[in-house]
Amino acid sequence: MSAGFGSRAGSWLGGIVLAAALAAGTGAHAGNQKEEAMADAVRVALSNAIADTRPPKPAFRDEAARVRYQQWFTEMSARLKKRLPDDQSRTEFLESAWYESTRAGLDPGLVLGLIQVESAYRKYAVSIAGARGYMQVMPFWTKVIGDSDRRKLFHMQTNLRYGCSILRMYIDMERGNLYLALGRYNGSRGRPQYPNAVLAAWKKWEFSPVAVASR
Image 1 (cartoon, rainbow, N blue to C red):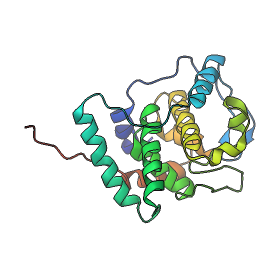
Image 2 (spheres, helix red, strand yellow):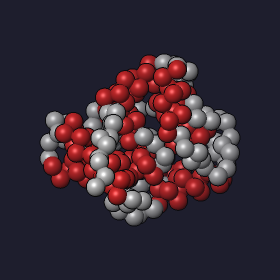
Image 3 (cartoon, rainbow, N blue to C red):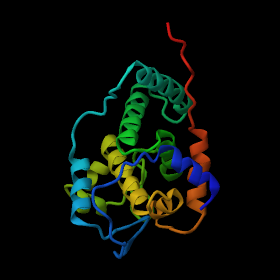
Image 4 (cartoon, one colour):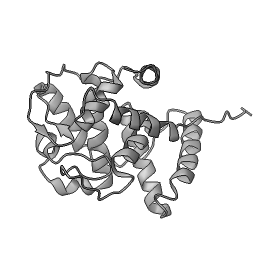
């Protein structure tokens, strides 16, 4: 694992882990991702996360957190405008990306970088292996932890929720090793090309908040 991945992972892996330990993956390969053997409690936790229908509206613990989010949103919206030119679509996408990323304990910049690599921000992208949507989720996941409706993977929030939840699972599975977790997400565990591509893309979506003087 590279030093870059180690230092980045340590900055945001805030101890958010699933309640039960994951068993080693022994399922058959399924394109970009592999169907993993998992404890029943993990499957239930993932299923509950996917089934949560609350709208992706940000909630803040204090005013400083609200200001930080607004700064992030304004900067990311400007960066994303060429890829998603429609203002309403871009707003809904960023609200959902931030909500689902932070809900899963992930840096939103990491998720935006992964989406850039996976689908180039194409909502209806489909890979040769059949992975779908922004985060290129394999359809078998809808059967494992969802309601078996593959069409929902083209729904923005649903796709982001699946993708973020699955990546969180892989990070926990690899005990915080982001390099190996990204490899699992892509079905290329142990090979450097995909993790390195996501890291490079992540750098493009990094965000440094501007300090606001108190009154």
